[in-house]
Image 1 (cartoon, helix red, strand yellow):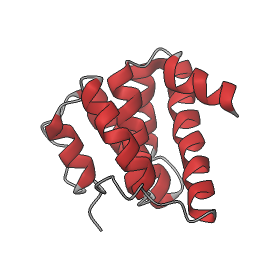
Image 2: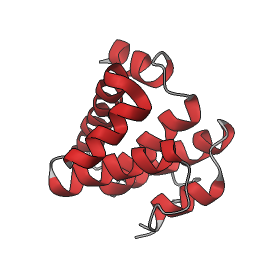
Image 3: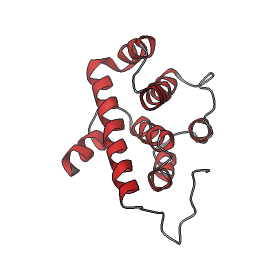
Length: 136
């Protein structure tokens, strides 16, 4: 699994800030505190704007965001909430990221969903010295 995670997080054509955005969308939609708390600082470090993080964190509308960011958030929200991506959203993702990019995006979200499930199964919490960053 480590090799797949390495590829999906660091070696796809997605910019690092967009990779972190996809991870945050996954963590938020699955309400995984551990994953969110680990990746919010990484997203900021990789250049994701705090305003975009707030949209994801507080389930705000994507209107006014850049095209790439809005597509990633919409794609993830639909995937996890509805268990499918609407045709319009999929077509927009294909237009923005291309076929390989869409597969990488879905695989990245699936990989972090798997991680969230494992973290939930073992009841993983943030370290006592960490402040949880995801609201209840």
